[in-house]
Amino acid sequence: MNARIPAKALKTRSLVETTVFQSGNSQAIRIPKEFQFDAKRVEIYREGQSIVLRPVAGTAAEALAGLAPLSAAECQALDLAMEQSDDLLALDEPLPEALLKPKRSSAAPRGAPKA
Picture 1 (cartoon, rainbow, N blue to C red):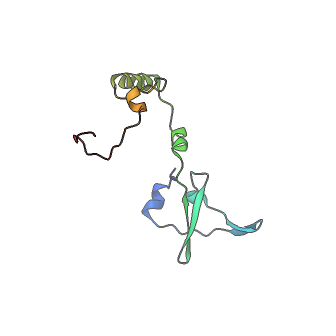
Picture 2 (cartoon, rainbow, N blue to C red; picture 1 turned 90 degrees about the horizontal axis):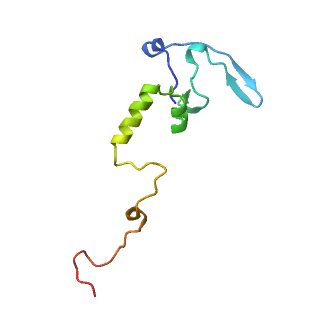
């Protein structure tokens, strides 16, 4: 998931002072509202004298969980599109035998007479 950065922060480089304090055995800072992340986790690294924070890329499941549910019309359109696509198997259909059998590998080239 990417953090939402306000448009005005992208246009200009903002400089804001904030408070540094102790939280247990760690040093912590208060992140001003205009810099807040729309993520639960961030990664931190040092770049010269700077410390950079950025949101951790989420999993596919987290990305999907953040999407709005489909409307009834969208569900019907998706169902119709899936019915018309015959190259996909339904999840409850067994795999065809051709896909289950392992391919034989032989040392002889194709078309070579068998001994």
